[in-house]
Length: 293
Length: 295
Image 1 (spheres, one colour):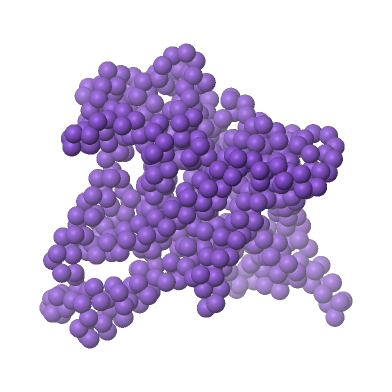
Image 2 (cartoon, rainbow over the protein chains, first blue to last red):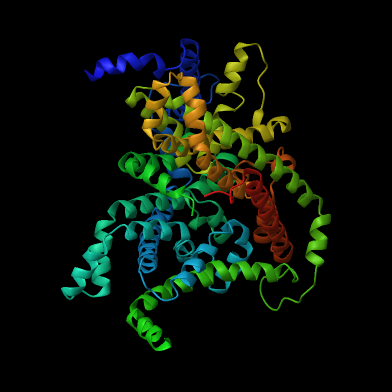
C-alpha cells in the first residue's frame, strides 16, 4: 500500500537523469579526491624505502613492511612525544569535562542570584579567539612558571565557554523534580550533581570529551606557544619537523618517505579509532555547537 | 528585599564556592592575558622586569614593518578565499549528498569527507607533501598529459592556492555535516505539500531546502568570518623559505615576533590590530547578511 503511494510520487522525488548522473560524478570525484591521498599515505608508510622513494603511484604496498614505522619510532624517538600527547590530552580532557560540567551545572540553577552576571562573564570569554592573546598567555604562564611544563599544557584550556553552555543546555533539560526528590531524600548538592545530573547527561559529557580530546591531540598553537623544550613537544609539532625540517628531530640520518608517512599515520590513527567508537556524538556536537546563542 | 536576597545568596553559597575555581581560571588564563596583551602593546619589548611605557611606538613601528604589511595581504587573501570556498564547497557537498537515497552509501561518503577534519594540520601537511611531491600522485597524473613535473611546495606560484585548497580539503566535510544536519531538520510536510503541488525536485531544492538553510548559512558565515584573520597552524606547518613571502599570515608574524624573538611589545601591538581587524570583518559580515536583524 505505502509502496504504491511512493511510486506515484517517485517522479517528483529525484532529479532529472542528467543531473542525477552529474550528482554521481561529483560524488565519485569527491571520494577520489578525499580517499586516494589517504590511501596513498597509508600505502607508502607500509612500503620499503626503495618503493616509497621511487616515482609512481603507490596504492598497494608490495611487499608490506613495517620498516618505516620501526625507523621513525626509533630515530625520532617517537615514544616520548606519543606519551606527551597522550598524557596532556587525556588528563586535560578529564579536567575540562569536570570543570565544564561544574560551571554548566551552576548556570543551570534557577533562582541563582547574579546568574546573569556569571553567564555574561563566561560568554565574554568566547568573543576573542585565544590565538589573539597568545603573547599575554605566554607572559602569564611565564610568571606562573608553566612554560615548558605538562601542567601548562593541561591547565590552559581547562574550561571553555562552548563546553559550559553545551552542558548547561543538557542540564536544563533534566526535570527539576528529580533533583527535588533527591534533596528530600537528604542528598547534598554535590551528590545531586554527580548522581542525578552527571548520570543523566552521559551523551553530553561524551560529546565534550570527544571534541576536547581531538582538539588537544591536534593542538599546535598552544604547544608551540608554551613549549620550546623539544622533549615536551606533542606529536603534531614533532611531525611538522619530521616532515619539513628533519635534521632537528632525527639527527643526521635522512628520513625517507615511508618513515615520514609512518609518522603521519601514527599521529592520525588514534583519532580515526576514536572517531569510529564515538561517531554518534559527533553530530550531537555539531548540532549543539551551531545553535545560535 | 535585601534581606531576602541575602538569604537567597546564603542558600546558594555552595554554588558560589563551586564557581570560584571556574572564575579564577577565566580571570587568570583568559581575561588577564587579554588585558596584559593590551598593556604590553604600549610598552617596551621586554618579557621580564619593568616595562617602561612607550606610547604608540610599537604601533608606529609595526605599520611601517614591511613584513607586517605583507602579512595583512596574505591573511586577507588566504582568509577570504578560505571563507568563500569553505562555504560554497560544503554547501554544494551537502546538497549533492542529500540527493543520495542509499543510506549506507550516503553515510560512507559523509565519513570519508569528514575524516580529514579529525586530523591536525601537520597530518594534513604530510598528506599534501606526499601527493604534491616531485614524484607524487599529482605530478604522476599531470605527467599523463605530458606536463613536466612541478615542485609544487617550493614554487611560489602555487603557495597560496595550495594553502587554500588544503583548508578546503580538510574542512569541507565538517561544514557539510553542519548543513546536512540542518537539511534533515527541515519539516518533511513541506516536501509532501510541494509534491502534491507538482513541484519538481529541483524546485523543492530551490524553494524548500535552500531557504530552510538560511539560518545555518548565516551561522556558518559568522563562524567563518571570526577565523578570517586567525589562520596559524597550517601556515606554521607549511611555511618554508620559498613560500614565506606569500603565505606568512598575521598570527605567524605575532608568534615569530613575540614568542620566538621576544619582541613582546611589537607582537602585542600586532595582535591588537588583528583583533580590531577581526572585529571589523565580523561586524561587516554580520551587517551584510543581516545576522542580528531577525530571530
